[in-house]
Image (cartoon, rainbow, N blue to C red; front, side):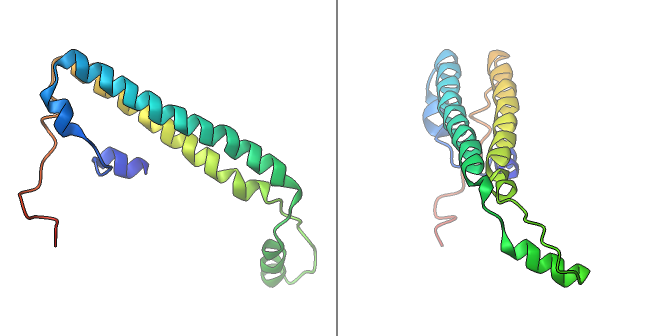
Length: 129
């Protein structure tokens, strides 16, 4: 998601933002990012809670893989916490990426750049095949 965001490949409703005054662009951009970052915050909070609740489970597949690689019958008892915690960590990294993008976008809007006019619109009929 971070790479898609950086490339501008995520869905955007910039057509509306192209038509409103600069102050409205800043306010609407802040509101949109606040909603997104709020949602990501909820995902991070409950993601860590979910990982903690499921930390008592182990992943038997890791024991099988370890036995195949090492040739020993030692059980690792790898906690599923580490599997589940990867989701909130990934979401937190995306939130950091979005915060940096928000700061840059607001800075450019305040400097008077037409950042919403930069977005290329595909020619009519393209992308519908």
